Amino acid sequence: MAKIVVIHGTKSDPDSNWFPWLKDELKKVGHEVIVPRFPTPKDQNLQNWMNVISGSNLKDCILIGHSLGAAFILSIVEEIEISQAFLISGFLGDIGIYEYDKLNSTFTHKEFDWIKIKENCHTFHVINSDNDPYVPWEKGEELAERLSVPLTVIKNGGHINTESGYVKFDLLLDMLIDSL
Image 1 (cartoon, rainbow, N blue to C red):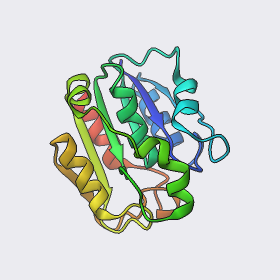
Image 2: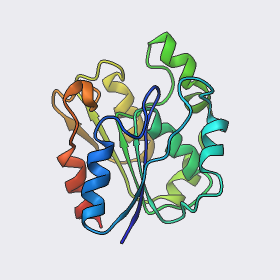
Image 3: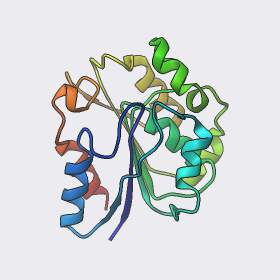
Image 4: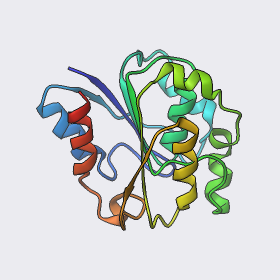
């Protein structure tokens, strides 16, 4: 049995997108799944999100981050060892949408310790869409390159969220099951 933590992004919550479906599917096969609620957009910053998970035992678990959740995972992995990470629609730096760039800046405008990140998690999966209306294609490429892993591309997947038709995410479930 694995412990899996799903991390939402900006202006999202544990009950949105494919998170509830994935949680149910993984629980059916005996895994522990946690989907914490982080403050967003009010009080959204890296320290407040870290406060939400402080005291949680995340060592050796699997982390799944959507959108800003992917950058947040990188900050977590600078501190602790995890089993593997799935970064969905992830990015670093600005995405070119002022409102989001302002909310995301404490997460994405920092110097990441890439050596420590790679030491603390040897298995990264980066999944982005080729037509994401929020995260430019190059951001997924950059993230995969920094982590020295291939980029998994979803054709016409949008932001891989409910708005794009993703209330289920079969590819992610299959990748998780195959990796366990």
